[in-house]
Image (tube, rainbow, N blue to C red; front, top):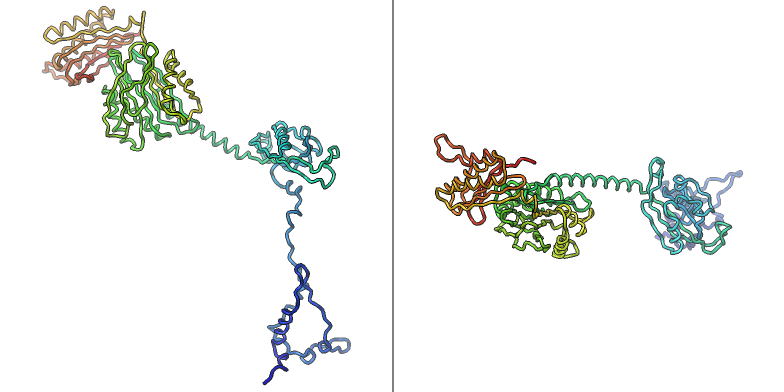
Length: 605
């Protein structure tokens, strides 16, 4: 069966034919409105008119089968729809309107005199309105006060932008006129093509017009935040320095035979102070311990470790141990306190009777000693590793320190520099120490200045200076020494009493102090004769503040004070000495043996 004749009448056939005709029709060029072509209706397509009213189209009049209700098309024609509105381009925006809405300060000037062309509302709200056409010196007194006019000249000449940061503007903090504001100003060169007359008739029209755009961004909040941060850091640093100084000696002990001064200067401007410390400890019998150390690292933890080590040093010093034994005890303690913290330390003991400085060093810088003739040399004995490393037996060395000599103990912050070897710093300190005369506190200040230590130095510095003055004249009359060798036997005790009585009488002590001194010498000699071994010696020493009685022998057994029972015939000698003397003690001597001593304080004046 052939359907060609009826295919145009079937439902859907007309739609497929229309689609084919649309695809075959030429498309309009881009950018031209798509208007469907109009054509005169065919006679068969024109509806019949009855009495001037068109009749409804029928299948017979249209020559096609009506489409189903679901197949009806949109009654609104496509050409009647309004296209969507496109946003304006950047070229269509007004620069004047843009600059007027931003909160930053904006001013535009032109020409070599920087004549005013424009200021935005933010600028006018801070500095007030400005008349156009006037020179910058007339229109911008505030910029002149801020130092921006020379900067604008540079920008105009060089064609390169310039920026000045954080300039203070009185009463210019945003909308709050009661608060000072801070602005960062950027001056940028601009060029405007000569499309019209010059902005100011008094200025010749030169194409292009060159000018400067001044842009001021408010940074008040940033500046105030930075100031608050600096104030907080300053408070934290002050607290840290206070903690550090509270752990140091508040007042140095002043020995009879030495003049001592020390100084400590925290490094940098941050709150992380270091662990440098120093101390002076009087041991009795005229001997003095001098300590300086440095805990590696910075901060409260280093300061806390330093405080514990300093306390331990004072406790061990009371045992009157040799320097290397003190460091041996400190080594184990440092490892127990904090295995991650390493400290260096020098512990030295000065004995005026020997005229030497006996010391031990745990990884610390060498002691510098200046002889009476001005020669400076280092204490060259070998040193051990820092405290806290363990597994090392420290040893003691000695260096002469007689009358007229001086010595300086210091931390690495005084001589260490990032760009130089530390030996160069020690050599510089030697030269400075050789020419640093005066009292110990003056020497400390001169060493700081000579080594270039200022408040901005990036490391903590501790210095301890000691001098053994050479006394002459009246001062020399206040310091005396007398010694007697004891060979044992029954005549040793009477000889010791007679010697002590004669010496104390020649020193013109009061009868009461004379008798106490003779009694103490007799008891110490008797104790040595009973419990010690030769060689034995009685030594009497007078300073400007005390009388010292000391007995040495070859036995290293240290006496101790004990309560004697009523029936005991011995054991009361040390108790008697401890009762009548200001202080007493005992220690082992370096060559073997011991020394037992006691002191009597002399009346003032």
